[in-house]
Length: 343
Length: 280
Image (cartoon, rainbow over all chains, first blue to last red; front, side, top):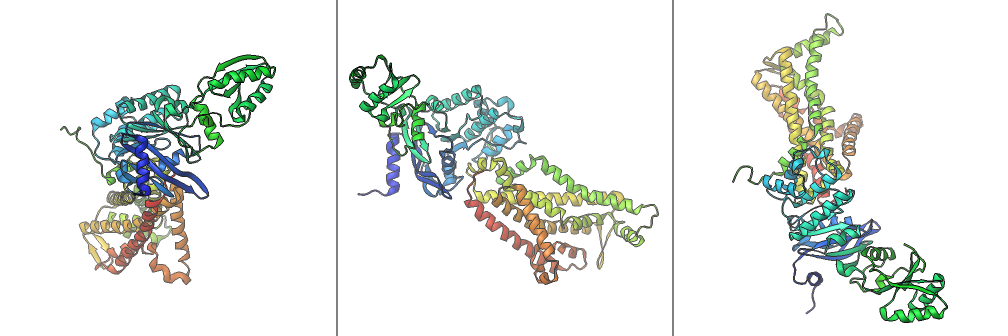
């Protein structure tokens, strides 16, 4: 029997999470601002217990997606779903399960941190003084609880933002670039806090354009660009799986031509003084034979360190390669054409 | 469970009140308005003791006769303030309600929570009206106290008779309510522009510009037929309270106009706000 589109959407979200419940999913989420399609048919799934990285370059549509998920703006098409509650239709029910902030966390400057938490928290239900103390402890702001927010530093406001997100014990925390503008110490503190939340079983949706941050903190991630999913899956699988070697010869330009002839232009690029070649292990002996046959002195052939998520991210977002779904290796690894290009 | 341990659930009105009270401008604005009747009383007192300078003798006699009773200070102050100063204050309060939160980014912080947008708008409207109501009562109180200090409190001579002090105070209270009804229209208009413009200053200015332009246009005899339909035309409806017997016609017309304008402004504000993208 044929499934309806919503049933198919729910099924694909459930498949992504295997045996874990889906906490957050989007289904064909689209947002058009005039002629600009900021979000274009986005399908993502976040499973219970995930610390889910939401990656994309500036302007990729990350904040717009978060606004859509939280019901701050209305989709042109599609919808988000939070623990079975559709947004925007059931936004209020969905919001009971969510805590977080969009862009910078904002507060009433004339009120103390404690009073801000009381006022904001009470919108989601009763708030006890004990709970306020607890969340202030979690973000290490207990001693400043009675100080007016007007005098808080950016880092303190970020931490208070996390405290207000936690105040009603939500199932899902949505944090939009929580380390933005923080000094290294502040960044480390916030990342540790997010990691701790994940360890405690809270599902976290972490938007960031810092790839190493996602590598450090998240177990699953999605990369978006121009409002579309580029790739989505476990962070460990987002890394390219292809094999690469670095080659140093007596004439790199001539070697580049030889290697391009063997492996194709997309598989060879320069990496400082080396040529970085995407080639399986079994192709390396033949590669060396050809270089020698072309009268080149082969000075070094060394395994390339695993290409980082950062390179991968740049390739994907710069090349505009979107909608590819799961990682597929070589195509993703050296997708940027142009031998001799340095990054 | 201890009192401290019990969960506290602030209602929308209490939350809005807490926010309003956390702003210095709330007190500065109220203080400025409360000063008006006090300055009014001081001004009249100084005019009364002008030292024999006969600079407008008839006027001085009139002033003496009129203001030799402190109970005249509140209605006189309200009459002066309800034309421009109080509408301006109402426009600023209403204009700041949504747009102020949008400008500070707190609107998105609130709307991430499970609050109903329509209920939030109504809570803000009600908070603004209650705030202005309290300010009006404080203005009247300041007028009574300063009038009492400078002129004493006596039975009040009104058109058609004299009323006792208690009855006069009741009439002053009713006059405050009528002025509040007028200001509710202004708040509603400002709230509509606050929802549309995202700028508290633009909302307040737009409200005042519309009020002033319509007022000017209606001065032309060609538009005289429209005057009854303009809410500010009824700003003096409460004068009818100070007659005995009271003439209820102007009061009814005024209240009807105030209610109509409030609904006409609030319905689109509510519709727009419920569906508006929050991009601030």
